[in-house]
Amino acid sequence: MPDLAERAARMLLEGGTMLAEPCHYCGGVRVMKDGRALCAGCGREPEEREVPEAPERDAGPEVRRLSSELAEERDPERQRQILARINALLGA
Ligand SMILES: [Zn+2]
Image (cartoon, rainbow, N blue to C red; front, top):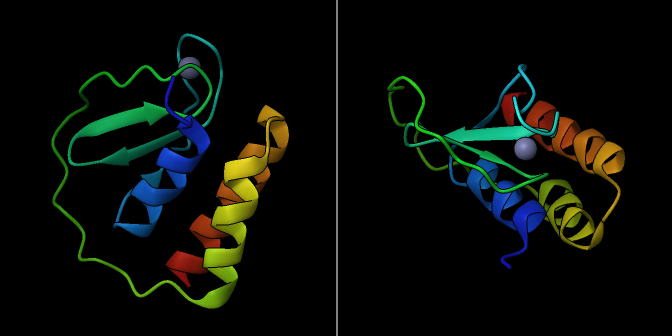
């Protein structure tokens, strides 16, 4: 099984966005990229409506640190908080 939190973090770094609406199946946090929304909780990634592709972002050291933290975090609530912080940093 792939490391979903790590994948979600990578998607954010590559221009994805965190969705406000949680996963329909498990309530987990979801990251949207290239028209797909990956759930960091259960791994489902149904296609969503098309969104324009965002340019690759230059992730700062804080974002890289949070990404490694996220990859090791197993608590869904903590994953959600870390993803929200990454998202806020990327959007700043
Ligand atoms: Zn889910």
